[in-house]
Amino acid sequence: MSLNLAALGEQVRRMSQTVAREVRQREARLAEVRERYLSGAGREEHWAAAVNLSASSANWLLAAPVEPLDTVADLPAIPADYAIVATDGSHIDVDRHGEVSCYLINIGLVYIRYGAQPTARLESLPKLYFAEADLFLHDDTRRIPIEGALLSVRRDVEEGVALGELAIRSLTDPSIPRLALQDGTLIRWALANADAKVRDHFLRQYLAYLEQMLQHEIPVASYISRSRSPEVMGLARLMFCPDVNVAAQRGANCAQCSDAKQGKTPSCMICQDLIDADIFAVRLREGQRSPIFRSLSRISVEGYEHHQIHFFFVRIGRELARIELPGWVAGRPEWVNQVHALVYDQAARGQGYPIALQRAHEQAVIRSAERRVFEQMVSSALHRAEAPASVSAKRESKQFIQG
Image (cartoon, rainbow, N blue to C red):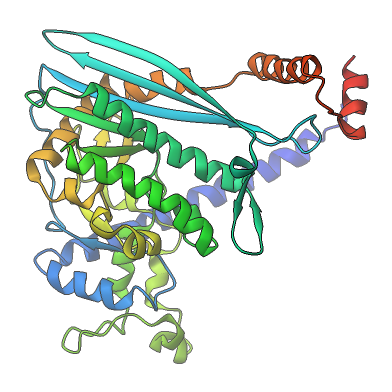
């Protein structure tokens, strides 16, 4: 046997001891952080002001409290009748070694109504992009290719636009609770540091979808499984910062940290590597939600206007899911309760993940066999049209090897 199990066994033993020690240390830090966080209850206005003052100078993400920090909201009554729409998407990127420049976005759409008139509609909406205006964004001197990360942004935006169109078409009965649900975040993080032309182009489309939902009074929410967001933990870090002065209302300034100037480890480092879910994991029982917070992400604050993204956490079995809402949903308690109840019911029906999102994913996913058929369709269509097309030497070599 080539593997020296005796030597490896000693290393595994040392690893397990290290892990156990780090877990104990982490739990001790968590207990102190949770205690400090709860000590802020009743002073939400102060901490909201401190967050706003610190947003531009702190080296971490922040969230502002909208409700009391010790809020634990029980699960509202789940309505027998309600309707929900959901979308998910996948894509085939531009293949630089292929016969023609194009990409495909496939959106899965789901409508489900429960109660006295149960029904469901599932469909997929594929769209092929090949025109110059599809492949590039243009300004006076540049052609910005839509591929890779930028194509992912376009797909995310189109998931939202498709969800809005589906909601307006399907959620026509305002007498029952209704919800438009997305998978993943409502915050277009990838646009935060994007070129201004790119940011404005895509954000304008996304905000138009949210505005439509507001005008039709259809609540929008998104579901993030196993979120590792650190924004509430960023608020907790402020509570340890020696430079956040109560009287003077000073914010944290990491570049001028008084602890660091004195040669000490910054007090806020106790929160290092901890996440929001760590704060609420021991506080929330089944179905309960945390307080609502407003995200201080730059793209949301600077670009989303009255759609600024808020969020809360909800306990669903072992899952602590992050639920995001536009500001106009978070500002109406009846809509917050509706989102809370419907998202929980959907996750319970889906054994831990919203069933509508599961079905949307099933409609959206492009399997390997379907990808090959798509490539064959493109090749055959180009041949029939007698269009000049050729693959790269790299593609030819791969095809030769596979053949």
